[in-house]
Length: 314
Image (cartoon, rainbow, N blue to C red; front, top):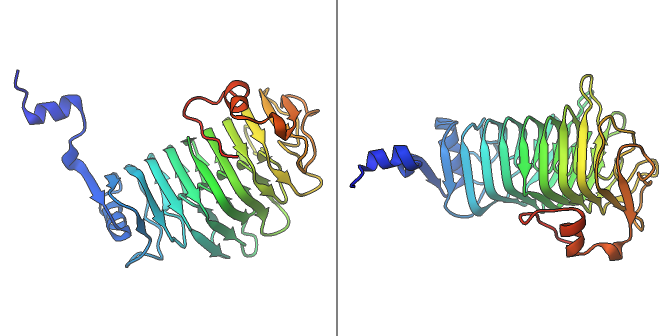
């Protein structure tokens, strides 16, 4: 049977003529500006340069497949906001954000809502929001501030983050799900006062979850995995199969988290040789202290139950 091309496309898959292939930052910016719901493939690595080099890409609601390519050299997040977007298979490197007047910053996006992010890697970057007056900046390696968003198979590597609500993956997380992800580098507070800092999540609440994750970050002013679960509403956070390899440098802060939980966490680990207060005795966190020599590839697979797609680099 000879099916028409039109019928084949509608019945069996995406019409490839609808995909925009871009190879420069200018093309990417203009494609999203013209159609926020665009379906985009990157066709090569490129730097953030040209007419729009100093601007975040406007709100994006479409699909971006980086196809393993790298976008480098930005002085701001790639996107201002993701809303119902899908972004996958993308490397972001050598981003440098140094601001005093911004409220949110992330290597991928300043904010994200109802989005799906997979296989995103932010490398060798610096995001520092100092905040002026009463401003409390949200800073995350991937996302500054997110809600109802899923992040999987992703990493933040050799990256330095500072602000008020700061997380290795995300600064503030409302109903965010994080799977199979890790962070390396440094997180710290850029100001005193209301600070919530963690190696994976800065401030998480409303059924935010972290599953199959680890951090090796140096952490100043916060806890190893979660900085805070502060919320006026639902504080429920669930953390499962995590490992804190971080050095928690503030004497009053903990290797995983510092308060008893409403929901029972499962199968979490901290390294006994590293700096920070132990979370082992805190109710409902299910934290076990182990030595560095116990951490092997088999430990990640058999004890932490990382699946075949998980990433681990020690």
